[in-house]
Amino acid sequence: MKLAKRLVLTTAVLATATAGTLLTTTVGNAAPAHSAHLPAVHAPAALKVPDGNKLTGVYAAKGVQTYTCTDGVWKLLEPAATLSDKRGRTIALHSRGPVWVSTVDGSAVNAAAAVTSPKDGTIPELLLKSTATRGTGVFADVSYIQRLNTAGGVAPAAACTGTDQVSVNYTATYAFYKPAK
Image (cartoon, rainbow, N blue to C red; front, side, top):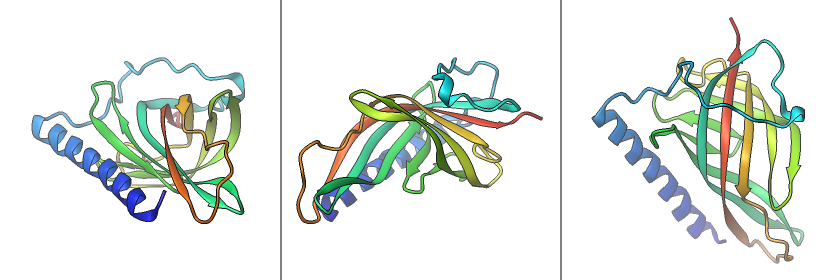
């Protein structure tokens, strides 16, 4: 995919997130769920979060995995996704880093993959360890993130040429954890 088309997709994702944020702010109660009523998280044993951490947020993600052609092979360039709460309100944007930035309060978390759990026909599920956080909101002090229930997002199997780029739709569930206090 050419740069202009990628920019259009990224702009569309950001516009959707901004509209969702404005809508939830206007309607009220834009705060994400932090109660004991979080959905159950079912992860493979390999992706278990270490003891001493508690689940603080579970959000559905919808977006794209963008790949670029490097030496005739598709390589991941970046993800671009919106994360929504159980009511469908946009809570965060996910992008290259990887980083998750709250559209509610501006807090953010960067992370690196600690464990990968492959799945047939889709991008792998992951356990990510936080490398940095900022702000005092949704993502303050996040220690671990699980990417679960993945669907789609796999790079094309065919060879590529030049500087081609392609974005592949994906969905996932992201579960966020903070140290138990």
